[in-house]
Image 1 (tube, one colour):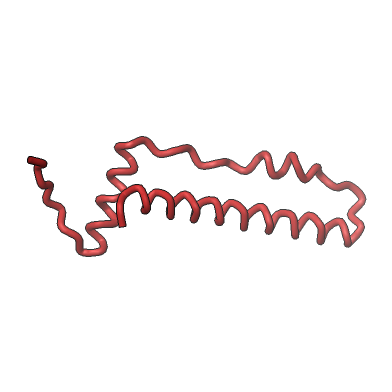
Image 2: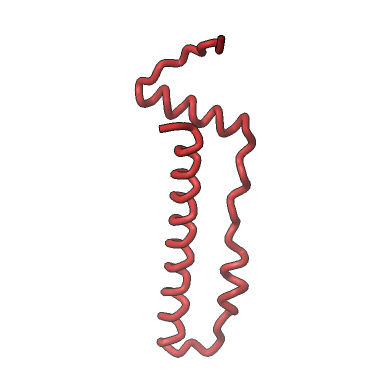
Length: 82
């Protein structure tokens, strides 16, 4: 797996986590609505309050890739290109 492919998998995983969180909030919102709560907060306002992850810098991404590589028993030596 190349670093680009790994980054694509990480982005998709984060998107799925965010989508699952929003789905849970929507379910809770509708459950409260069906119980006939007198005053419902605005759903869009609640969803907008969710903190979206900030994109990682190149250095942070490289550090994360190195950590994952080390956990999986990968080599940490750097080869020079000729």
